[in-house]
Image (cartoon, rainbow, N blue to C red; front, side):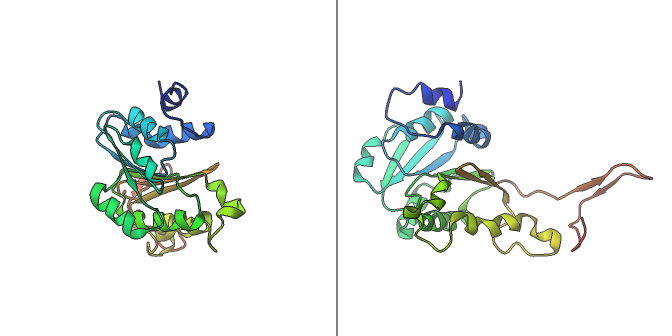
Length: 223
């Protein structure tokens, strides 16, 4: 059994997901199964995905949903809490974070407006703990006019952040994100940002007169 099988076997609340999302979810979320984790899902709709995450992650997970629709409160259940508010309201997000955070998993399936995707990630990115993941769904909305409410879309916003992953090899500082950022993966309509434990960059030379292990940062221009 896996997340996709659970989804197909759902006979509870309605859940809408693109099918190609499921292997992406599992590749980033399998490590959290049966662990004490907190997941924030932005956008509750019919409440089905909140139940799906609870069933998938297991009995030690705490699921928090946020939505602008007051009727979403009815989807609270054991392990599931719902807060009513707008993701664009930083004061609201602050209250949610102070009450439930930090979050091991964030899934933004909210308004899909570019301004909201950017402002929400901008608020939470420096609050993500080690070994956490931030997933942004339905990023194809960047190319749909009704969601283009910002001069910068989520791809343009994340580009310098993804570049910061290798900035130190050119002698640059990590000015955009902390070094806890380990990957930014762009999929069809999903972006997954991983925050793993800091690691030592190590290069190994094999062959020649001697084997060498290099644990220092490269000088500018070296490869």
